Amino acid sequence: MIDFEEVYRDYLEDVYRFSLALCRDPVLAEELTQETFYRAVRSAHKYDGTCKVSTWLCQIAKHLWYQELDKRKRKGT
Image 1: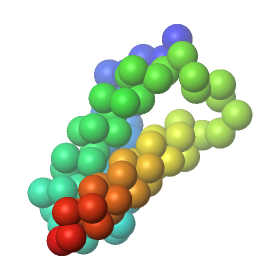
Image 2: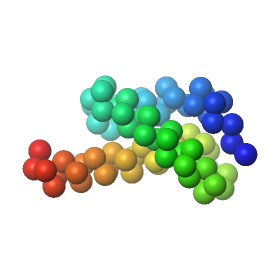
Image 3: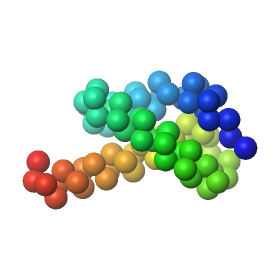
Image 4: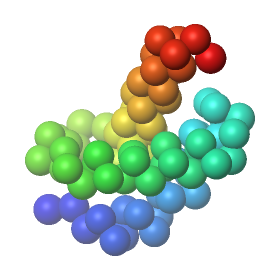
């Protein structure tokens, strides 16, 4: 079982920096980071340990960023 308090504490800064590198917007990076951890908690049962936790979290963040880009494209912004 994953201890998400520890995961959050250990990887918050890494996920935030990764998100910021993707979007270049501190506010959006914070939103992506929070949503990343929320999604990680919801899908913890799918994490099989074949990659590092940081890699798993950054993959979630990357997919959230792609979703944001798709949403922006649909809106025309």
